[in-house]
Image 1 (tube, rainbow, N blue to C red):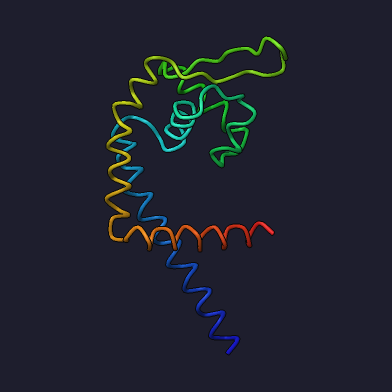
Image 2: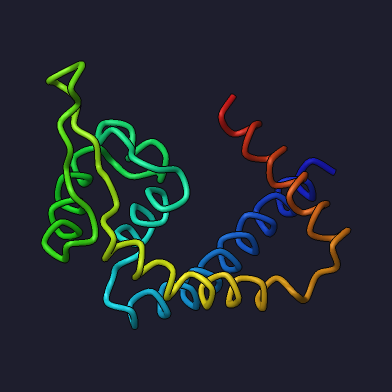
Length: 145
């Protein structure tokens, strides 16, 4: 019985991994067509939806190593999609702020991005989506503990 549980766990892991890769491949292809890599898009999307963010906290919010944030922010700054703003209260803190050009870019590509994700997920009913969300959260919380 224990061997069957292990086999099912391994199968679930493989199926989840393949599904994740397939979804990311479709989504990332669209992002690349728009001239960004997935990390750049994630930073821009974060700033668009959540407002100015301290550079030190961006990595944790988009699951990226802090050393890579500087590189990504540099690239987005070169494209004039964001700017660095020094914190007036604490000189050790620098904020990333989306520019008007960055907002216009996200507003131009996000509806299609959203639609692609919805199209992928449309094979599930709303109830199935809610169940998958609940189960994946359960797995994620368990893995963290």
